[in-house]
Image: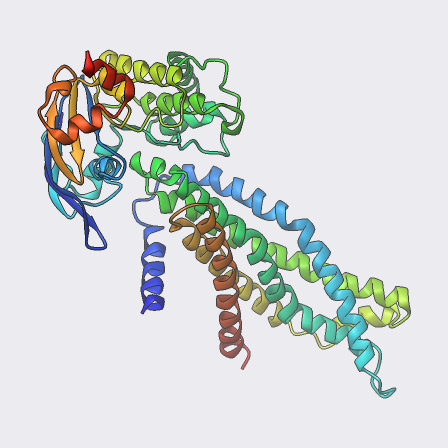
Length: 249
Length: 246
């Protein structure tokens, strides 16, 4: 479980996140949603430590990440898998080498064991035949799947996904969402997904945190999101024409 | 104020290279890869440019030595001094900054804007040390070698053009480049090359590593890397000459 308490962040005097608190449960898909520019990605990067917070605390299974020394932070980070918006694959390495990278750096596994693990992860994301390809030779959806394979190769306890289906067609988006959901349940990870896609919200939102202009306005499950009673959230949810037509019914 | 901020940030960046490093085994392969990229990748340009510089230096020195009282071998002596003291280490450093420095800044800048550096960082790896230290070590290993090759090619270029045009005969040229030779000039050139390699690789990596924005900013960082590296090289060139030769 990941717990955040009163996390605040500002850039050049402009408040981006203001006293955000919440809990992200283990074995569930925890979603951070909101319109563009509300601070979702900043919050995610604060949680993984890529952006330092101005105030507030972050706990990984009761371990205080905010006040941890370098050793402790490195130890926690080695339990993290992260899927970036653009995949963030290393251009100079093949798909196989990209997925193997965390194992090369973080483990003392033998080459055969590493290769087996990489093959398993690539098979798990449906890319067992793409190992020898370079990132420039594969599609956007495939890059995301390679990113997922790299994120899970080290058996992470915490999985973070920053807009996993941005720039993908609806069908591939659903496949990626389903994959993240399956992996979360299968490996019992604490998964946090940042998204503004309502398909993802309705498909995988076990726990949802709604951000609006840097504030947390609502928290709940996907079953409750359509009748939250929060005007800003209603506007966000029913901005989608399909959702809007369902509301009419 | 911005200048002092950047200088301070640069020194913090240099300090980060050595704290919380990965194992030496990890760096071994990375350094080898960088050595191949930097050394082999720059060889053709270095050979081409230095050969022509040597040839042009020979022709221009001969053009300026109009007195019949000055022996012809002085042309080779002047070319040797120019090559060893300045042309091989310093002019090559400017070319090196343009080729290798811009490539380092562009590569790291692109890694930054495509979140590849974040991906390294999020795994608990010191990204500065992992990505930059091998570049600096490889640069400091390869650039002195390139300078030695450049010096040889420059002198050989002078020899070729001298013999081909009849400006100076081969025996005169060989005599000239060996005449009153001070070995310390080679040591001086190698000291300079080490300093220049460090400055170019660290400044270029620094500019690339802290790129923010998109493709336009990567271009700006790359230009900045070359400009700042060249300025640093010229300042270091003067300081080293003052310290070691004056």
